[in-house]
Image (cartoon, rainbow, N blue to C red; front, side):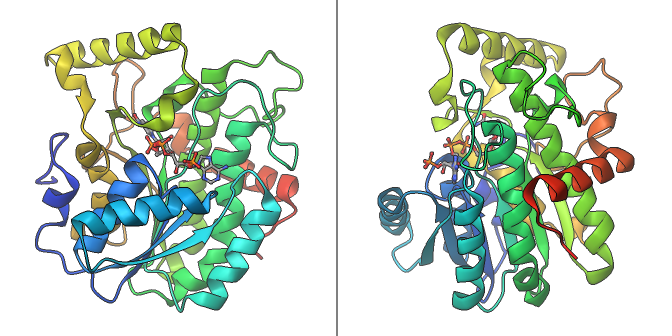
Length: 321
Ligand SMILES: NC(=O)c1ccc[n+]([C@@H]2O[C@H](COP(=O)([O-])OP(=O)(O)OC[C@H]3O[C@@H](n4cnc5c(N)ncnc54)[C@H](OP(=O)(O)O)[C@@H]3O)[C@@H](O)[C@H]2O)c1
């Protein structure tokens, strides 16, 4: 049983850890949970590579982190997950610039945006949140193999409860687009990708963990209407009620929100135990659909993970070999 809970912060879960000599690669390192993860790990001595699609935003994040951690060992790299050319270029550049990656944190994401498409024509949320990370991870796996810790953390969400993956129509070509159905599909894909990585790489000592960070006010809500916000607030109120907690406890601060990904990346008790979905700094139970937390069975089903893997290879033309 983890000694941490939903109130634990990044600094709490990393207390006593020495990350000097480790290289941590964080997608979406320029904002919200990714920036806080980068700050907290840099404060423990890690060399942190912040990946993002906008150099000015990356530079601003580096400056903000250095205000808190003046001697932070930080690098930046451009990676637009909405363009496979950019993802491949990032992967190749990373292999030239860095010797290894100990911890890969696939954190970047978009939520509930209007219908849109990536440069390769994939529906925006599935393309960015899943396919971009699927290809990036393929290119970075050789560096992870050279790392000591060999952990991959994929940011999912309780939003995976909204929907499984429609393997016949991930791009919403034959069904009406709904922003949260699409978000749910992409966040389920993040869990199934985690299971797929564990199936394929555990024997090489690489382990993967999916994480729901909690409900945190970040830039993720940039596309939400007032109606969407009320829908989310209502879900969070109900979750708090079900847990016998006051409604205001439903929201986490950014350091509390980023704690579970820092925990999944570093907790000793998770060593060798990947393929799981974590929330509130513990491994979640498989949900019986009556509870507000937990992981849905369709998200951790190994057959579904295989279907997603095959589809992702076919859509991107990238095979892990
Ligand atoms: N906040 C929550 O309540 C919550 C709940 C559940 C799950 N999550 C998950 O937590 C993760 C982090 O979210 P956050 O709350 O920290 O949101 P955030 O502040 O909006 O950060 C998201 C990051 O993803 C990056 N990103 C988006 N599209 C990208 C692209 N095409 N290429 C490269 N980077 C891209 C953003 O870059 P730009 O700044 O350039 O847009 C930003 O750095 C997401 O995967 C999200 O689904 C968050």
